[in-house]
Length: 296
Image (cartoon, rainbow, N blue to C red):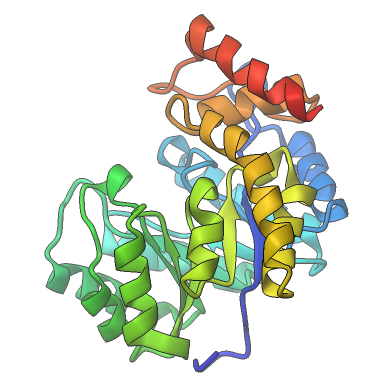
C-alpha cells in the first residue's frame, strides 16, 4: 500500500450497531459485550458510528463516547476505524481530531449528505479533513444515502494526500469500483461497503469489507474474505452463496433496523432504533427471521 502511514486494511471489518437501552440511552455494557463477541470470532476490525451505528441520531457527545468505548474495549486487539463524517466540514474535522486523540487507527469519513456538493466540493471537503486532522482516512461513498456519488477521478485526485489510504465503496456500481482500481492502483485500498457484493469487489481488486452482516455472522464473513485472499476462490464462492440470502435480507428495510432485529433474536445487544427509524413491519420481520433461522 503506497501511503504516508504504516497501515493496511484487509479482511472483515464490522460496521457495529450502537445498542440502546429500552429508554433509548446508550447501552455501554452491551456495546462492550458485542465488541468482545466480534473479536472472539476473528474480525479484522471495528467501525463505530457509521450508518449502521445510527450516527445520524447520535448527539456529538454520544458519538464521541461510542468511539471512546470501542477503542477502549478493543484495546488494540483489532483495528478501529472510527466514524467521523458530517455534512459540515468543520464538524467532520472536529470528529476526526477526537478519533485521532482517542487512539483510533483510522477514520471513516462519508461524502457530505443533503448538501449535494460538486466533485470539486467533495475534493475540497476531504482535503481540509486530511490537512487539518492528519489521520489515516477511509473515504466512504454511499450515494444511496447521501444523494451524491464520488467519481473515480475525484478519488484519484484525493490519492495525492498521504492521509487518504482507503475507500469504502457502497455505490453498488462494479464498473465504477473497477475504474477506481484501474486508475488508482495501489495508491488506495478498496473495501466493500455492500455485503452482497463483497466477493465481486474482491475480484475487482478489493481487500476486504466493512460489513453489516458481520454483526451476526462474523466468523463466516471473515472466513469468506480470508479464503478469497488466500487464493481459495472456490471456497470463497461457496461461502458467498451461503451468505447471500442473509446479506440481502438484512437490507429488506432501512439498515440498521433488520440487523438489530436479527441481533435481538440471536441474544446480542441491540435494543430499539431511534426515530425517525421505526420497528420492522411484521410481514418483513417474518421474512427476515425465516431466513435468519436457517443460519442458527
